[in-house]
Length: 337
Ligand code: UDP
Ligand code: MG
Image (tube, rainbow, N blue to C red; front, top):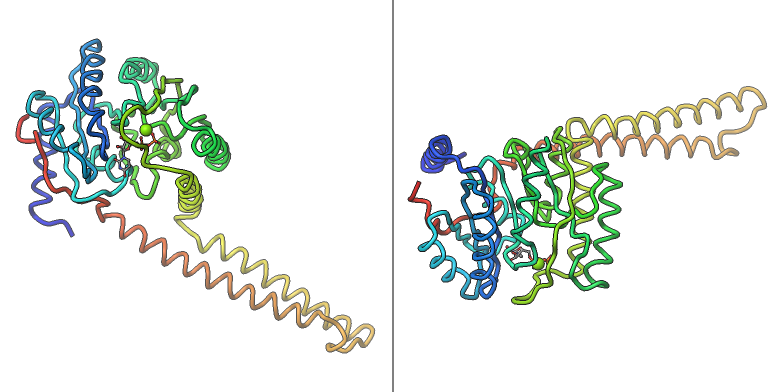
């Protein structure tokens, strides 16, 4: 259930959006990026000045413990296009991005890292590509400037796997810099490490998705928040979404079919045992067939029960989707239109 206040904010946001929709919403998750914020904002402003489009810039402070928030307040004070969302604690990059998307009003949404590894100068090329008739343009860090063994190698393997499992052929799902038409994100719900799979969801929902090479800079200030373990999380998340996407409407069909096949094998084995008994008088105890039939029968029951369980899980999953994955402590710059 949404509270009255939440609904009111949502309705106001809708009115707001209709009244004054900027062309671009650029949103950046920030977790302990204090030294990067000012130079990044300057670079971003320079890039936007070249574009001549209306834009809003949304910084999402994901529970930073350094001076990031203080710097963001100062930036918001001097730049009227800036809005800051302060989350109650560190929720992770995906949740921070979801907060940015939820607060955005623009026609085109552009996520970007706040650590200066993405280059704001690439925004223009993403937009040009979007204009060619795509709904999603994803950045490809063709010349990625991260450590090879712990970051680039696992990511190459994970990207291959993701491309194979999802059927959406990109080289670099993990690049944060992308551009989306708002409509392409309409049905996308984020959780886990899944911000990187937004193009996949969008493509499954019919969006036209493409990729262009973008620049990538080494991190010079602050520290990366991730290591090797994220690759495993990413792969497990992918298996989950693939399963959800393929079978979410009727898992009982999948498990039910396995169950019926097991029942059929069980029946044939039993039948064969009976025929053998009639034809050449083989005793039931002398062949493994009855045991085999029993095992297959038990397996069939297991499959059916698993199907039912999955069905229940899926329903619970859908009902729980309304839960927000982050909580907001403060909004800065939202009072101005
Ligand atoms: N980030 C975040 N919350 C987190 C971890 C990271 O908002 O829990 C932000 C971080 O500040 C940066 C972006 O997500 O803007 C990407 O993080 P990072 O540069 O550490 O990832 P990498 O580039 O090493 O993959
Ligand atoms: Mg980075």
